[in-house]
Image 1 (cartoon, rainbow, N blue to C red):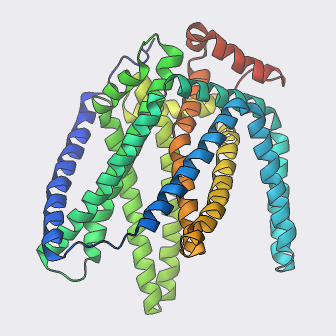
Image 2: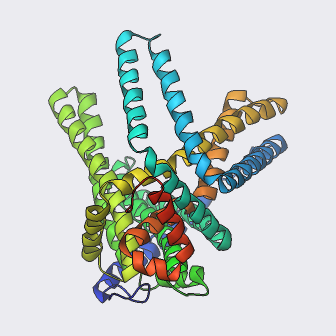
Length: 427
Protein backbone atom coordinates (compact mmCIF):
# COMPACT_ATOMS: atom_id res chain seq x y z
CA UNK A 1 0.00 0.00 0.00
CA UNK A 2 1.35 3.43 -0.96
CA UNK A 3 1.96 5.72 1.97
CA UNK A 4 -0.21 8.83 2.05
CA UNK A 5 1.51 12.23 2.45
CA UNK A 6 4.74 10.69 3.73
CA UNK A 7 6.75 10.03 0.54
CA UNK A 8 8.76 12.54 -1.47
CA UNK A 9 8.95 12.76 -5.29
CA UNK A 10 11.98 11.18 -7.03
CA UNK A 11 15.28 12.99 -6.75
CA UNK A 12 15.52 13.72 -10.49
CA UNK A 13 12.64 16.19 -10.10
CA UNK A 14 14.85 18.32 -7.86
CA UNK A 15 16.82 19.39 -10.94
CA UNK A 16 13.80 21.41 -12.01
CA UNK A 17 13.45 23.11 -8.65
CA UNK A 18 17.16 24.02 -8.74
CA UNK A 19 16.70 25.40 -12.26
CA UNK A 20 13.82 27.54 -11.03
CA UNK A 21 15.87 28.87 -8.12
CA UNK A 22 18.66 29.81 -10.55
CA UNK A 23 16.13 31.57 -12.78
CA UNK A 24 14.71 33.41 -9.77
CA UNK A 25 18.19 34.61 -8.74
CA UNK A 26 18.88 35.78 -12.29
CA UNK A 27 15.59 37.73 -12.39
CA UNK A 28 16.26 39.27 -8.97
CA UNK A 29 19.70 40.56 -10.03
CA UNK A 30 18.53 41.91 -13.38
CA UNK A 31 15.38 43.35 -11.77
CA UNK A 32 17.47 45.24 -9.23
CA UNK A 33 19.70 46.57 -12.02
CA UNK A 34 16.63 47.65 -13.98
CA UNK A 35 15.13 49.42 -10.98
CA UNK A 36 18.38 51.28 -10.27
CA UNK A 37 18.65 52.25 -13.94
CA UNK A 38 15.05 53.47 -14.06
CA UNK A 39 15.51 55.44 -10.82
CA UNK A 40 18.54 57.28 -12.22
CA UNK A 41 17.07 57.90 -15.67
CA UNK A 42 13.80 59.52 -14.60
CA UNK A 43 12.49 61.41 -11.61
CA UNK A 44 9.69 59.76 -9.77
CA UNK A 45 6.76 62.08 -9.23
CA UNK A 46 3.28 61.32 -8.05
CA UNK A 47 -0.03 62.93 -8.86
CA UNK A 48 -2.03 60.85 -6.42
CA UNK A 49 -4.50 63.12 -4.61
CA UNK A 50 -6.10 62.71 -1.21
CA UNK A 51 -9.45 62.17 -2.93
CA UNK A 52 -8.02 59.24 -4.92
CA UNK A 53 -6.66 57.64 -1.77
CA UNK A 54 -9.98 58.04 0.05
CA UNK A 55 -11.87 56.66 -2.93
CA UNK A 56 -9.58 53.62 -3.22
CA UNK A 57 -9.86 52.96 0.52
CA UNK A 58 -13.65 53.29 0.52
CA UNK A 59 -14.13 51.15 -2.59
CA UNK A 60 -11.77 48.44 -1.34
CA UNK A 61 -13.40 48.40 2.11
CA UNK A 62 -16.87 48.05 0.58
CA UNK A 63 -15.62 45.23 -1.66
CA UNK A 64 -14.09 43.43 1.33
CA UNK A 65 -17.25 43.89 3.40
CA UNK A 66 -19.63 42.61 0.71
CA UNK A 67 -17.30 39.70 -0.13
CA UNK A 68 -17.22 38.72 3.54
CA UNK A 69 -21.03 38.75 3.68
CA UNK A 70 -21.23 36.54 0.58
CA UNK A 71 -18.62 34.18 2.04
CA UNK A 72 -20.66 33.68 5.22
CA UNK A 73 -23.86 33.23 3.21
CA UNK A 74 -22.17 30.53 1.12
CA UNK A 75 -20.91 28.92 4.30
CA UNK A 76 -24.35 28.95 5.90
CA UNK A 77 -26.31 27.88 2.81
CA UNK A 78 -23.78 25.77 0.87
CA UNK A 79 -26.28 23.25 -0.51
CA UNK A 80 -29.05 25.70 -1.51
CA UNK A 81 -26.40 28.10 -2.88
CA UNK A 82 -25.60 25.73 -5.74
CA UNK A 83 -29.30 25.28 -6.56
CA UNK A 84 -29.91 29.03 -6.45
CA UNK A 85 -26.88 29.59 -8.69
CA UNK A 86 -28.12 27.00 -11.20
CA UNK A 87 -31.59 28.52 -11.43
CA UNK A 88 -30.18 32.05 -11.56
CA UNK A 89 -27.75 31.26 -14.37
CA UNK A 90 -30.48 29.46 -16.33
CA UNK A 91 -32.80 32.45 -15.87
CA UNK A 92 -30.06 34.81 -17.06
CA UNK A 93 -29.47 32.55 -20.07
CA UNK A 94 -33.18 32.70 -20.93
CA UNK A 95 -33.14 36.48 -20.59
CA UNK A 96 -30.11 36.69 -22.87
CA UNK A 97 -31.81 34.42 -25.41
CA UNK A 98 -34.96 36.54 -25.46
CA UNK A 99 -32.90 39.73 -25.75
CA UNK A 100 -30.89 38.26 -28.63
CA UNK A 101 -33.99 38.27 -30.85
CA UNK A 102 -33.85 42.06 -30.73
CA UNK A 103 -30.53 41.86 -32.61
CA UNK A 104 -31.51 39.39 -35.33
CA UNK A 105 -33.25 36.05 -35.69
CA UNK A 106 -30.05 34.04 -36.10
CA UNK A 107 -28.57 35.36 -32.84
CA UNK A 108 -31.84 34.60 -31.06
CA UNK A 109 -31.96 31.04 -32.38
CA UNK A 110 -28.36 30.35 -31.41
CA UNK A 111 -28.84 31.84 -27.94
CA UNK A 112 -32.02 29.79 -27.49
CA UNK A 113 -30.17 26.63 -28.52
CA UNK A 114 -27.39 27.33 -26.00
CA UNK A 115 -29.97 28.01 -23.26
CA UNK A 116 -31.83 24.79 -24.05
CA UNK A 117 -28.56 22.83 -23.98
CA UNK A 118 -27.67 24.34 -20.63
CA UNK A 119 -31.12 23.50 -19.26
CA UNK A 120 -30.85 19.90 -20.48
CA UNK A 121 -27.39 19.66 -18.87
CA UNK A 122 -28.80 20.83 -15.54
CA UNK A 123 -31.76 18.47 -15.73
CA UNK A 124 -29.66 15.46 -16.70
CA UNK A 125 -27.12 16.01 -13.89
CA UNK A 126 -29.39 17.42 -11.21
CA UNK A 127 -28.71 14.41 -8.98
CA UNK A 128 -25.16 15.74 -8.56
CA UNK A 129 -26.21 18.96 -6.86
CA UNK A 130 -26.51 17.52 -3.37
CA UNK A 131 -23.12 15.80 -3.63
CA UNK A 132 -21.53 19.05 -4.85
CA UNK A 133 -23.23 20.90 -1.99
CA UNK A 134 -21.71 18.49 0.52
CA UNK A 135 -18.28 18.98 -1.07
CA UNK A 136 -18.69 22.75 -0.76
CA UNK A 137 -19.86 22.53 2.86
CA UNK A 138 -16.97 20.25 3.89
CA UNK A 139 -14.45 22.45 2.05
CA UNK A 140 -15.69 25.61 3.76
CA UNK A 141 -15.57 23.89 7.14
CA UNK A 142 -11.99 22.79 6.46
CA UNK A 143 -11.06 26.34 5.45
CA UNK A 144 -12.66 27.67 8.63
CA UNK A 145 -10.67 25.24 10.79
CA UNK A 146 -7.45 26.03 8.87
CA UNK A 147 -7.87 29.75 8.22
CA UNK A 148 -4.13 30.12 7.86
CA UNK A 149 -4.73 29.21 4.20
CA UNK A 150 -6.29 32.66 3.68
CA UNK A 151 -3.19 34.39 5.07
CA UNK A 152 -0.98 32.17 2.93
CA UNK A 153 -3.06 33.13 -0.11
CA UNK A 154 -2.56 36.80 0.72
CA UNK A 155 1.19 36.21 1.04
CA UNK A 156 1.33 34.54 -2.37
CA UNK A 157 -0.54 37.49 -3.89
CA UNK A 158 2.30 39.66 -2.58
CA UNK A 159 4.87 37.26 -4.05
CA UNK A 160 3.07 37.39 -7.41
CA UNK A 161 3.15 41.19 -7.41
CA UNK A 162 6.85 41.15 -6.53
CA UNK A 163 7.56 38.63 -9.31
CA UNK A 164 5.68 40.76 -11.85
CA UNK A 165 7.65 43.86 -10.86
CA UNK A 166 10.97 42.00 -10.92
CA UNK A 167 10.31 40.53 -14.39
CA UNK A 168 9.30 43.96 -15.72
CA UNK A 169 12.42 45.61 -14.32
CA UNK A 170 14.61 42.76 -15.61
CA UNK A 171 13.14 43.18 -19.12
CA UNK A 172 13.82 46.92 -18.92
CA UNK A 173 17.42 46.27 -17.84
CA UNK A 174 17.98 43.77 -20.65
CA UNK A 175 16.51 46.13 -23.26
CA UNK A 176 18.71 48.97 -22.00
CA UNK A 177 21.77 46.71 -21.98
CA UNK A 178 21.42 45.68 -25.62
CA UNK A 179 20.47 49.22 -26.65
CA UNK A 180 17.68 48.09 -28.98
CA UNK A 181 14.68 50.39 -29.32
CA UNK A 182 12.52 47.50 -30.53
CA UNK A 183 12.24 45.25 -27.50
CA UNK A 184 9.60 42.90 -28.93
CA UNK A 185 12.15 40.08 -29.08
CA UNK A 186 12.91 40.68 -25.39
CA UNK A 187 9.23 40.09 -24.65
CA UNK A 188 9.17 36.84 -26.65
CA UNK A 189 12.52 35.39 -25.57
CA UNK A 190 12.82 36.71 -22.03
CA UNK A 191 9.78 38.29 -20.36
CA UNK A 192 6.98 35.91 -21.42
CA UNK A 193 8.85 32.66 -20.56
CA UNK A 194 10.28 33.84 -17.24
CA UNK A 195 7.14 35.58 -16.04
CA UNK A 196 4.87 32.68 -17.05
CA UNK A 197 7.11 30.06 -15.46
CA UNK A 198 7.37 31.95 -12.19
CA UNK A 199 3.68 32.84 -12.11
CA UNK A 200 2.63 29.22 -12.69
CA UNK A 201 5.09 27.92 -10.09
CA UNK A 202 3.74 30.35 -7.48
CA UNK A 203 0.15 29.55 -8.41
CA UNK A 204 0.67 25.80 -8.21
CA UNK A 205 2.67 26.07 -4.99
CA UNK A 206 -0.37 27.69 -3.39
CA UNK A 207 -2.54 25.04 -5.04
CA UNK A 208 -0.47 22.18 -3.57
CA UNK A 209 -0.47 23.77 -0.11
CA UNK A 210 -4.26 23.82 -0.18
CA UNK A 211 -4.44 20.29 -1.58
CA UNK A 212 -1.97 18.95 0.96
CA UNK A 213 -3.87 20.60 3.80
CA UNK A 214 -7.19 19.10 2.75
CA UNK A 215 -5.68 15.67 2.16
CA UNK A 216 -3.90 15.62 5.50
CA UNK A 217 -7.09 16.68 7.30
CA UNK A 218 -9.09 13.90 5.65
CA UNK A 219 -6.60 11.03 5.44
CA UNK A 220 -3.99 11.47 8.18
CA UNK A 221 -3.68 12.35 11.87
CA UNK A 222 -1.37 15.29 11.23
CA UNK A 223 -1.92 17.87 14.02
CA UNK A 224 -0.76 20.78 11.84
CA UNK A 225 -1.68 20.07 8.22
CA UNK A 226 -1.03 23.60 6.93
CA UNK A 227 2.51 23.69 8.31
CA UNK A 228 3.31 20.22 6.98
CA UNK A 229 2.01 21.16 3.54
CA UNK A 230 4.13 24.31 3.44
CA UNK A 231 7.27 22.37 4.37
CA UNK A 232 6.56 19.77 1.70
CA UNK A 233 5.85 22.29 -1.08
CA UNK A 234 8.91 24.44 -0.37
CA UNK A 235 11.03 21.30 -0.06
CA UNK A 236 10.79 18.08 -2.03
CA UNK A 237 7.41 18.95 -3.54
CA UNK A 238 8.85 21.79 -5.63
CA UNK A 239 10.23 19.46 -8.33
CA UNK A 240 6.98 18.29 -9.97
CA UNK A 241 5.55 21.81 -9.71
CA UNK A 242 8.50 23.36 -11.55
CA UNK A 243 8.52 20.63 -14.20
CA UNK A 244 4.82 20.89 -15.03
CA UNK A 245 4.99 24.68 -14.96
CA UNK A 246 7.92 24.58 -17.39
CA UNK A 247 6.01 22.39 -19.87
CA UNK A 248 2.97 24.65 -19.52
CA UNK A 249 5.20 27.68 -20.16
CA UNK A 250 6.51 26.16 -23.39
CA UNK A 251 2.96 25.75 -24.72
CA UNK A 252 2.00 29.28 -23.70
CA UNK A 253 5.12 30.75 -25.33
CA UNK A 254 4.33 28.89 -28.55
CA UNK A 255 0.83 30.32 -28.44
CA UNK A 256 2.18 33.82 -27.81
CA UNK A 257 4.63 33.48 -30.69
CA UNK A 258 1.92 32.09 -32.99
CA UNK A 259 -0.45 34.92 -32.10
CA UNK A 260 2.27 37.52 -32.68
CA UNK A 261 3.03 36.01 -36.09
CA UNK A 262 -0.68 36.04 -36.93
CA UNK A 263 -0.96 39.73 -36.10
CA UNK A 264 2.08 40.57 -38.22
CA UNK A 265 0.72 38.64 -41.22
CA UNK A 266 -2.66 40.35 -40.80
CA UNK A 267 -1.02 43.77 -40.95
CA UNK A 268 0.91 42.72 -44.07
CA UNK A 269 -2.24 41.43 -45.78
CA UNK A 270 -1.09 37.80 -45.93
CA UNK A 271 -4.51 36.22 -45.37
CA UNK A 272 -3.49 32.57 -45.84
CA UNK A 273 -0.68 32.74 -43.28
CA UNK A 274 -2.88 34.77 -40.93
CA UNK A 275 -5.61 32.10 -41.12
CA UNK A 276 -3.10 29.30 -40.51
CA UNK A 277 -1.60 30.94 -37.44
CA UNK A 278 -5.08 31.81 -36.17
CA UNK A 279 -6.01 28.11 -36.21
CA UNK A 280 -2.66 27.19 -34.65
CA UNK A 281 -3.18 29.74 -31.87
CA UNK A 282 -6.64 28.34 -31.18
CA UNK A 283 -5.32 24.77 -30.99
CA UNK A 284 -2.49 25.80 -28.68
CA UNK A 285 -4.93 27.66 -26.45
CA UNK A 286 -7.14 24.57 -26.22
CA UNK A 287 -4.07 22.44 -25.43
CA UNK A 288 -3.04 24.93 -22.77
CA UNK A 289 -6.43 24.75 -21.03
CA UNK A 290 -6.45 20.94 -21.24
CA UNK A 291 -2.91 20.68 -19.85
CA UNK A 292 -3.67 23.04 -16.99
CA UNK A 293 -6.75 21.05 -15.99
CA UNK A 294 -4.98 17.68 -16.04
CA UNK A 295 -1.83 19.08 -14.40
CA UNK A 296 -3.81 20.33 -11.42
CA UNK A 297 -5.29 16.87 -10.87
CA UNK A 298 -1.83 15.35 -11.37
CA UNK A 299 -0.32 17.64 -8.73
CA UNK A 300 -2.88 16.40 -6.20
CA UNK A 301 -1.62 12.84 -6.75
CA UNK A 302 2.04 13.92 -6.74
CA UNK A 303 1.47 15.63 -3.39
CA UNK A 304 -0.58 12.75 -2.01
CA UNK A 305 1.66 9.83 -2.99
CA UNK A 306 5.03 11.49 -3.56
CA UNK A 307 5.08 10.11 -7.11
CA UNK A 308 6.67 11.58 -10.23
CA UNK A 309 4.80 13.46 -12.93
CA UNK A 310 4.26 10.43 -15.19
CA UNK A 311 2.79 8.32 -12.41
CA UNK A 312 0.63 11.25 -11.39
CA UNK A 313 -0.70 11.37 -14.96
CA UNK A 314 -1.46 7.66 -14.85
CA UNK A 315 -3.39 8.12 -11.62
CA UNK A 316 -5.40 10.94 -13.22
CA UNK A 317 -6.34 8.50 -15.98
CA UNK A 318 -7.41 5.94 -13.38
CA UNK A 319 -9.48 8.63 -11.64
CA UNK A 320 -11.45 9.37 -14.79
CA UNK A 321 -11.82 5.66 -15.52
CA UNK A 322 -13.49 5.22 -12.13
CA UNK A 323 -15.62 8.35 -12.10
CA UNK A 324 -16.07 9.15 -15.79
CA UNK A 325 -16.88 12.81 -16.35
CA UNK A 326 -18.37 13.16 -12.88
CA UNK A 327 -15.26 15.03 -11.75
CA UNK A 328 -15.91 17.66 -14.42
CA UNK A 329 -19.64 17.80 -13.64
CA UNK A 330 -18.94 18.16 -9.91
CA UNK A 331 -16.59 21.07 -10.55
CA UNK A 332 -19.11 22.72 -12.86
CA UNK A 333 -21.71 22.77 -10.10
CA UNK A 334 -19.16 23.88 -7.50
CA UNK A 335 -17.99 26.79 -9.67
CA UNK A 336 -21.50 28.14 -10.34
CA UNK A 337 -22.09 29.85 -6.97
CA UNK A 338 -18.58 31.31 -7.00
CA UNK A 339 -18.91 32.69 -10.52
CA UNK A 340 -22.37 34.10 -9.80
CA UNK A 341 -21.19 35.63 -6.51
CA UNK A 342 -18.15 37.24 -8.16
CA UNK A 343 -20.29 38.70 -10.94
CA UNK A 344 -22.85 40.11 -8.51
CA UNK A 345 -20.12 41.53 -6.28
CA UNK A 346 -18.47 43.20 -9.28
CA UNK A 347 -21.80 44.76 -10.33
CA UNK A 348 -22.76 45.94 -6.84
CA UNK A 349 -19.31 47.32 -6.02
CA UNK A 350 -19.09 48.91 -9.46
CA UNK A 351 -22.38 50.76 -8.90
CA UNK A 352 -21.32 51.84 -5.42
CA UNK A 353 -17.88 52.97 -6.59
CA UNK A 354 -19.35 54.89 -9.54
CA UNK A 355 -21.59 56.89 -7.18
CA UNK A 356 -18.85 57.13 -4.53
CA UNK A 357 -16.26 58.35 -7.03
CA UNK A 358 -18.66 60.91 -8.47
CA UNK A 359 -18.92 62.53 -5.02
CA UNK A 360 -15.14 63.10 -5.19
CA UNK A 361 -15.36 64.64 -8.66
CA UNK A 362 -14.04 61.54 -10.43
CA UNK A 363 -15.26 60.01 -13.68
CA UNK A 364 -18.13 57.63 -12.71
CA UNK A 365 -17.27 55.16 -15.48
CA UNK A 366 -13.63 54.87 -14.40
CA UNK A 367 -14.65 54.71 -10.72
CA UNK A 368 -17.14 51.92 -11.45
CA UNK A 369 -14.52 49.96 -13.39
CA UNK A 370 -12.00 50.31 -10.56
CA UNK A 371 -14.62 49.22 -8.03
CA UNK A 372 -15.50 46.16 -10.09
CA UNK A 373 -11.81 45.23 -10.30
CA UNK A 374 -11.47 45.61 -6.52
CA UNK A 375 -14.48 43.34 -5.99
CA UNK A 376 -13.17 40.66 -8.35
CA UNK A 377 -9.73 40.80 -6.74
CA UNK A 378 -10.99 40.55 -3.16
CA UNK A 379 -13.55 37.82 -3.94
CA UNK A 380 -10.99 35.80 -5.91
CA UNK A 381 -8.63 36.04 -2.95
CA UNK A 382 -11.31 35.00 -0.45
CA UNK A 383 -12.62 32.10 -2.54
CA UNK A 384 -9.23 30.96 -3.90
CA UNK A 385 -8.63 27.96 -1.57
CA UNK A 386 -12.12 26.47 -1.98
CA UNK A 387 -11.86 24.93 -5.49
CA UNK A 388 -8.69 22.99 -4.68
CA UNK A 389 -10.13 21.82 -1.35
CA UNK A 390 -13.23 20.50 -3.11
CA UNK A 391 -11.17 18.88 -5.86
CA UNK A 392 -8.92 17.13 -3.32
CA UNK A 393 -11.99 15.92 -1.44
CA UNK A 394 -13.33 14.38 -4.65
CA UNK A 395 -9.99 12.69 -5.37
CA UNK A 396 -9.85 11.28 -1.83
CA UNK A 397 -13.43 10.01 -2.12
CA UNK A 398 -12.76 8.20 -5.40
CA UNK A 399 -9.15 7.02 -4.92
CA UNK A 400 -8.93 6.41 -1.16
CA UNK A 401 -12.52 5.67 -0.14
CA UNK A 402 -11.63 3.04 2.48
CA UNK A 403 -9.00 5.22 4.13
CA UNK A 404 -11.36 8.20 4.05
CA UNK A 405 -14.04 6.12 5.76
CA UNK A 406 -11.54 5.07 8.42
CA UNK A 407 -9.94 8.45 9.12
CA UNK A 408 -12.94 10.75 8.46
CA UNK A 409 -16.11 8.69 8.90
CA UNK A 410 -18.35 11.77 9.19
CA UNK A 411 -17.15 13.16 5.86
CA UNK A 412 -17.42 9.79 4.15
CA UNK A 413 -20.90 9.24 5.56
CA UNK A 414 -22.12 12.67 4.45
CA UNK A 415 -20.87 12.16 0.88
CA UNK A 416 -22.29 8.65 0.74
CA UNK A 417 -25.67 9.85 1.95
CA UNK A 418 -25.69 12.67 -0.61
CA UNK A 419 -25.24 10.13 -3.40
CA UNK A 420 -27.48 7.33 -2.13
CA UNK A 421 -30.38 9.74 -1.69
CA UNK A 422 -30.54 9.79 -5.49
CA UNK A 423 -29.91 6.08 -5.92
CA UNK A 424 -26.19 6.41 -6.72
CA UNK A 425 -23.41 4.63 -4.85
CA UNK A 426 -20.29 5.98 -6.58
CA UNK A 427 -18.93 9.40 -7.43
